[in-house]
Image (cartoon, rainbow, N blue to C red; front, side):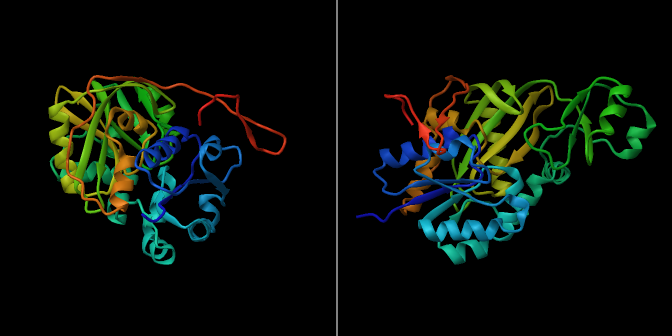
Length: 333
């Protein structure tokens, strides 16, 4: 009988879809074990869809790593899955300690990769040095000279979820936005269709699946409507990027197809909010992770559906007076 495989979802928040994808994959593969979710807030919805859930301190508390180690040991965790940008550097820095003290695999890329991806200036430099297209980045001197062609795009160098990211159409707008954004970077605004590419790589950084998704509509920086598009130009360019960067696990790449070709926006080395779209289309990163943990060897494939459209929507659950979920009869978790 195969040993249990218990998966820990960190900073679960609203990641109900992801929790359910792991549960579904475990059931389909006849994997015994639990999906455990943790968060610092007892009102994080995804907690109540996991098999088990725990509360942990905030990431910036100084007690986060110790709390994760404790949960892993108490729940017999096999795999730790980060979900938000702000925990990635801390986890990468403590990866050896966490894995040694728990026996779990931590799904985080090397610290060198995280440092490239988490700092947008580092991402810009990396792309330029390795021959990938990115929008022009303006220096302080160029911004002061005033010979600017609008629209431009302003974002923080360590931004996430499109927070404090602005398209500006005039000098007055630019000056106003620069007073609002902490550590801003200013680029040309890219015109063209925007894509998110879900890439899954094994623990040796070999690409297993790669799914381009056209971003048809977004909300708060996260995809709300999308369509799978097997765009060969994107697949080839992102393959070259992944082979250079060498991350592991589920990676989310954002780019636009412009008149210059493929121009990159950012690389997020974690599950993105829209990852369940690619999973539902057949590129199932959750199944792949369970299979890797069982010792299977996976190879690259494009066995997922093309030209299917996904529409995301909100739902809610009710917690009773004891903070226990109550579901209507027949509802599916």
